[in-house]
Image: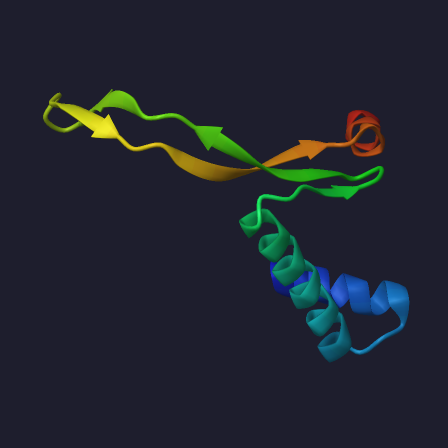
Length: 92
């Protein structure tokens, strides 16, 4: 499913226009991103939690040359699925 498909489903399910659904989805994504940039967690009960995970600096290898390289420490977004989502996916 792509973003445009999701926008269409949101519009159909909620009875709003596709433009309004697109604005709502964009707002959700922008606000989740903004909170993660501030180092905050975003918890959607039943769905899951978005958070930031810190990766420490480490040594790696260049796959083409085999040369050892230094990989810098970084922060990456992380998603942990909630129980309701996990249970819904398990059921067939």
